[in-house]
Image (cartoon, rainbow, N blue to C red; front, side):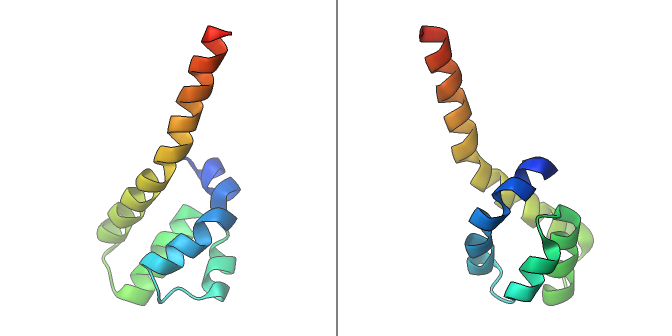
Length: 83
């Protein structure tokens, strides 16, 4: 998921982020505001993770939650080709 998509989906993802990383507060999520680097930094700070570990966790999370959007794009592409 690229940075622009993350910012666009930020409000949708906040609840899921809190479910995964329960120590993130609403204020943290507001401060992060869809910025991947800030999210990684907060996870490092709250959970004591090394930067590479936090980065990998965030990438895995975002990849899992981008699959639905990718599937929708592929279906829309197929529909356009059929029309």
